[in-house]
Image (cartoon, rainbow, N blue to C red; front, side, top):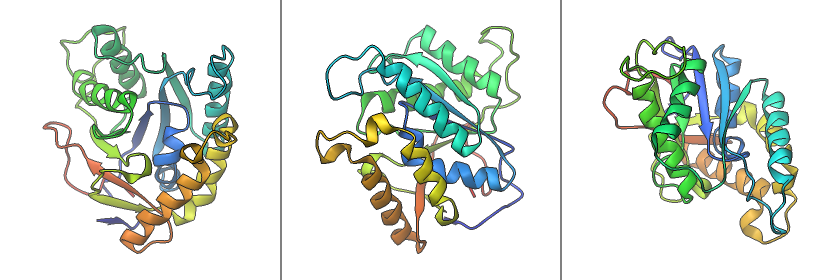
Length: 244
């Protein structure tokens, strides 16, 4: 299925949850830009601090730098951003972790949540996606008391974004991001700590983004595209066209 434009079923509020600074820019920022263009409210959230994402050994200042880069990228998109504050590779299912995600959803109150699929390459990605899926359900449960925010009226829709390098991901929906590709490039360029690394081709993020966006575009007949798949979880599925 290829997204073609606005429709009556597009969500009013969209929350994208990425594991690390730069994940959302790589995998779904073009679609978030399209949502904004079509009138949806968009919010970003980053679970991990990015504190272990350097190439030169431990760097106490890296987490602060990467947060500033993520804030700049969100500014380039024109959307607010939240940070959950987990350390890299410190994301695990626990009552405290669930509470952080539930609080995020109850504060953001999204109709649609976009996050990582379970088959992505990094354990943080898979765990963030799993916690986001649980939080979609728990955030609408009166049995979960977290802070003073009331439960959501119903669980948000949950949609998985592509994997890094499109490895092992079978899309169900493509979004044409040709009109938003320059914004996607500007957002990724904000992450200079990652895009300027010279420690091997695996970290050539700007090239990876271009190739993956063109690959998904080739698959659906667009110049550039992003790929998605609704999560097959009861209570978090809706009929209709929920993506642009």
